[in-house]
Image (tube, rainbow, N blue to C red; front, side, top):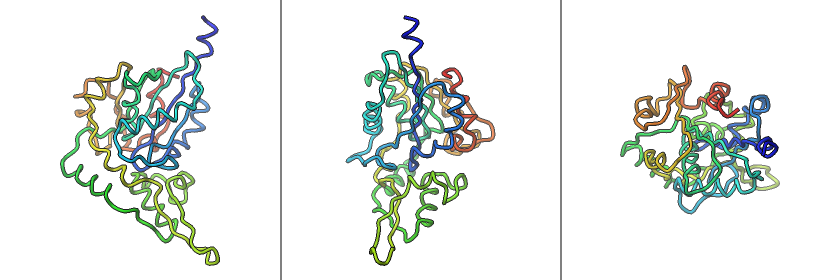
Length: 257
């Protein structure tokens, strides 16, 4: 019994926000090597990065695609999952942890989840989802748009390696050596809709912590506290607290280190 428990591993699953990719967690690698005792992985959500698009986007469908990807992870009989998701990824983490899905989840941390949506915001999301793919003449133009769409402008330079995963190039004429660039994200993902946090939380039996950066304009402490689960506020940080201060966000998982 003791030997079996000793071989158990906690796998940390990091889920990115709308428009980003799993590469946004790459700067965490040195920190995780020092502080996280088990394995970790940062998949691309459906329609982002290298993950194929869905025919229709919903939080359940995004969670199912993520769960399918977790099927390739070799879990021992006592291994557990800790889910940390940012914004959209936080909602997907809650959907993954639902009791009916049956995954061996120990806990969920949702960072920067937008709780309240106005009719105008939902209409704008539908409008963005209906737009055709935009092509750019240069990588720099596409990179700057990617950083704006993903909310990462000012946090990564356009030439940062993290940005590469969010871009795709279509080669032009071979002799000219030209081409054009687009975002890797499927625009239709914007139509995922409004997360129903109370329903998602009621379907989860494991501990949930909802966190936000103190300066995050997308969600307030009061909105999170109304949901009846523990709330953590990270001083001086904004919506992308996981990029601004990885150590502060990782500290939210101290109980599982």
